[in-house]
Image 1 (cartoon, rainbow, N blue to C red):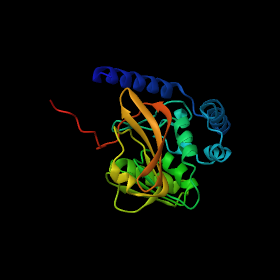
Image 2: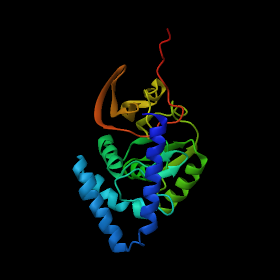
Image 3: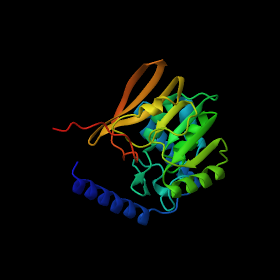
Image 4: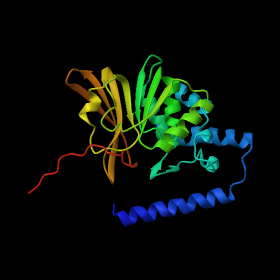
Length: 245
């Protein structure tokens, strides 16, 4: 996609969001819960998310508490809410679908690359034993720590750094990349435990595919394509070598 076109789309989305925020009245507790229910029933169930534990979690972890200030009325909308610094929250249906596909167990450790708003972090932490979330934007890391603490979620460690090619040397049962990447760094696979899996959106605009890659045996991996999407790139993501003539 041409950079000018991308800029026009982002500008249009920004103007549209401002209009929604300007004319949206304060939502009552009832309307918030009705909006949450509609999100689950109309957006998420229809996107092949049928795991009842995942659906129940979406009622427990309050998405409106993790969106940027002033965007609460958009918390349940089927759109990517801007966070600043060129980053966006995933749509609610993508968050739920990825959580379902990971099939996390209470004993598992998760590495998240890109904390963003902290909402996906909260969902992961609610299903796993511990989550280490690496965020390259200090502002996001500070904000997410505050929101997670306010939500009473204690099994998360947020560190500022670059995790595009892995982080330190610990091993994990699941690794989640929240930005797209042309390819998955081999160093990330080195941090997977046997049977572990990596979720990543792989490709270049305009064609990207969400993939779940599972370590099945030394040197052996199984890759499943989940769905097509288009999200912002992971900062410092590895790129394939280009042929030069």
